[in-house]
Image (cartoon, rainbow, N blue to C red; front, side, top):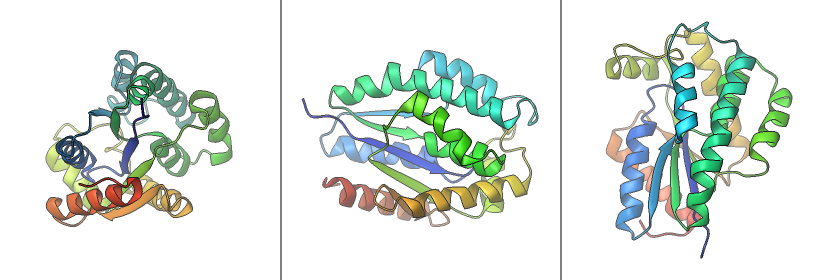
Length: 211
């Protein structure tokens, strides 16, 4: 059986990742593919429990290294229990966030040197990477305003200061520019329909599929 493809969405708060992941999943199913849509942190029973610890509570609940460890524990469980078995069965997996988020949030955002995160990444994930990553980009201030309208209660990350969010935006753009064959930067200030068209075009081109 042919291995499935792994597609991830990345970007700051309010960029529209969940909406676009759903729209892409629907387009892939329409094209006749079997698709699993999932998210991080989360996507497996154990990872969803860790998600509650990571996204709720005071913004200072964890320091950067603790967050990174919790994220990679959740990611490992997600891979072992959900992502890798689905890919082995030929299912295409669409994931709202993956390891690039740890590099951006805990690395660029919290200031953990990337060289210190890479051994942790190698231990938990190995050489496994997404086939395609869509980086939905918009100014941090606009993203936070969108997130605030969507979620009145907010999350730990949404409550962090603007400087943090500007650093993680810069991080995502650096990650994408370093791996242009894997990553496509999509202007998320556009209307949702235009973003969806850009996303499907990028996936169609990189994975040679008609959408």
